Length: 130
Image (cartoon, rainbow, N blue to C red; front, top):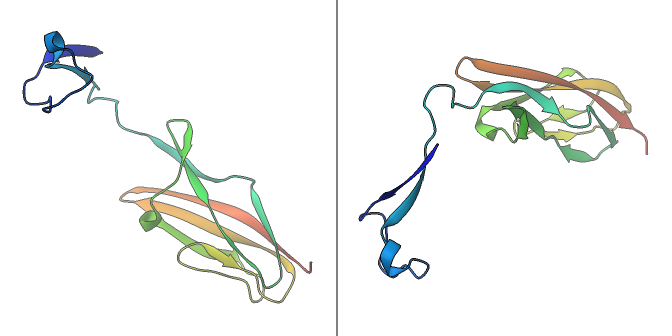
């Protein structure tokens, strides 16, 4: 719920939007401690697959599903690996996918790990000639 109360310490000097009668009124938002925490439901890659031309690169962008909404994960908690390799194709620790000089199909996996919470998302990768 919401409540309005007087709070002398919150109002800064020179508040232009406050009238003299309500200069010390402050708006509070109450969030319950139980059940109020964000719940991560999974890790997804929008589009489901990646296609790139030989000898080019693309930045992988995975998203967390948090309370039913998509959000960018903290890069510190992400790792990337070629789970099914394509000759010459690599993925950096920052998620930069670089195609080699060989066309083919494979799979890269993005993994989010924070404490005991871990989600992995495999993504099909196709490297084309042009």
